[in-house]
Image (spheres, rainbow, N blue to C red):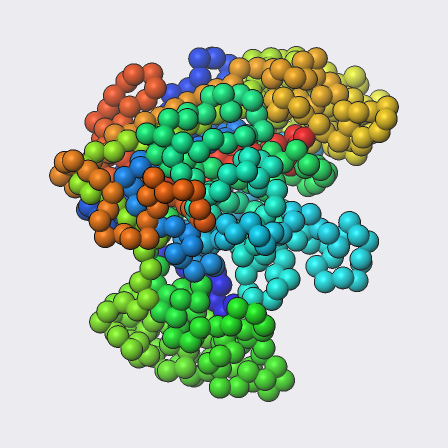
Length: 569
């Protein structure tokens, strides 16, 4: 195992910030109003800068996200993933989601945390999203009961979704090659959840699972680098939905996202100094990294014997190894003058950071435009409840699915507008009305069985061909989405430094050039002073930083998660 794997993030000191409210849809019954607050640590030209983005939907009456693609201006410096050690921290996200659990009202708050690492885009070594041991019936095999992406079968301290290519990606995006990928795995309601950001070259043509998205997604290369967000295996035509404890994913949804402009890794082993107990001694790719489980890596542990070596405070300074920036040299003050994650007491260069690795770079002084394309979710009956949350998608609900027993007297999760028996006394309560294995609130056809495929039930297993949140088995228009698709394209005109002619950074040789052929790896970046302009033509002079992939992370924790956990294909 890797020592001190979890990221620790201090407050980001910002110089510019903005609260940006996107306009709602044209429908009065269903609004789509995400909010965005952004903070950049440094807006100077050709500098690496951390930034924080607070993003989400705060009104519980708003529809949730369905998807987002961000475009990073072509002058922006994005370091190619093959120039960054695999496993290096590149960012983190904390979200507060609103869930419905086991048919209950959608009003339970759940905190979710993701640590994002630089991940491989080498497609020659793949990992399955399935649990192959379970499918093969190998109950005694290593990894049985855990999906392969969330395992570490090669024993190098990285989950396999990081150092292997999840093979389903091409089935979602088409056979394109991102030049950088970042990925994180978190446990949500007992389920390992994979969240990924992929950055491609300008003008890349995708084959997305939705015809509407393919048609609406901007394709102009001048917009810059498109950044896609993938949650789990959403959009994979081979997906097999499974009943689970999360039956709804609703608003409000908020998140705080941090993207790192640089990281310090003195031995370039993929573990940054802050989380590396042996920062000058690279750990091996394979094999045990900490045999005695004392959070001191084997290569510098004076005694790593699993029976006799465990010592959780090796230097006896009162600070355990996992939190000690000099675990082998006593330094109770933890002083770190150069801020590189290595304490002065053991730092070979205490006045100069060791192992600085740039992850991205501001462009030259000039003006750039960021573009964010986002869609909400459909509402077929215009009752203000998105299809993926509406158990009666074609009949206006009598109740509110976020409130206990509202319009649901028998408490079975099925709104009275289409419940054949809503009488709580005379056996009205039936949490799986069609007995297909999916609870009413998780079922995209709660009144028509579609839990398993068969010769007589070709539209089973929650199939939803048009991706409108209504299963084919009960959709009168299974090939045409029901309900309007809320669409918003936001542009932000960015001024870096004092403005000027602009251009890509001259001090970032490892940054991807827009003219390069698509090749390994990609993530996202930020910007500085700006004039924002919404697609309705209104303008406000302010400051904005659009954080590409990290900004979009909350999106997939919203609507996308609903498609996965409740309304899958």
